[in-house]
Length: 193
Image 1 (cartoon, rainbow, N blue to C red):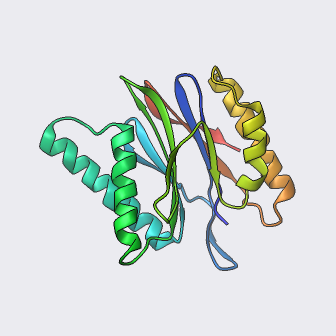
Image 2 (image 1 turned 135 degrees about the vertical axis):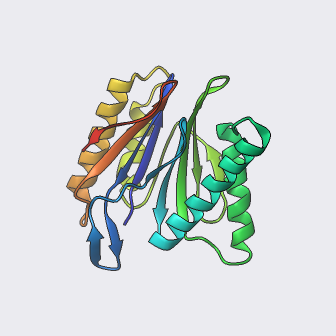
C-alpha cells in the first residue's frame, strides 16, 4: 500500500511518499519517512516490506559513502542509479529484495535527475514517476500537466493535486504524505500534505 511519486523540474526534483508503515491490514505507525537521504544532494524514495526497505537502502548508502571516502569524489546520481540496479539484479538471482525505488538527485554538472527502479532491477530515467496503487491515479495527471520549465511552486501544487486524487479515490489511502525537494542547495522538506 506504499505510495511514491516524483517530478523533475528545470532545476530541481520533487518527491513525495506516504508516511504509513503497515503490515498486512495493521498500521504500525503513521510517521515513517520513506524518503531516505543518500548524501546531501541525493535521496531514495523507497517502498516495500519494512525489513527489505531498510536493509537494502542502508546497504546501498553505505557503499556509496565508502566509494566517496576511498576515492575522494562522490558518485553522480546516474552512477548511484546504475550501482543500485546492479545490486538489485544480483539479489534477484539469490534472495530478492521486495522494494521499489525512486532515486532523485542533483549534480552540479548535469542538473536534476529522477530514476525509477523496481524489484526486478528495471531502471528508467524519467520526468514523472510513481509507485504503488496511488500511482494509478497520479501518473496520467502528472503526464498531462508536466512541462520542462516547471517551477517548484507549480510542482508542489501538482503534487498536491496528485495526493488529493489518491485521498479521494484510493479506498485505503494513507493519512499523510511528505514532500521533499532536491536542488543545488541540497535536500529539504517542503511540507506534509
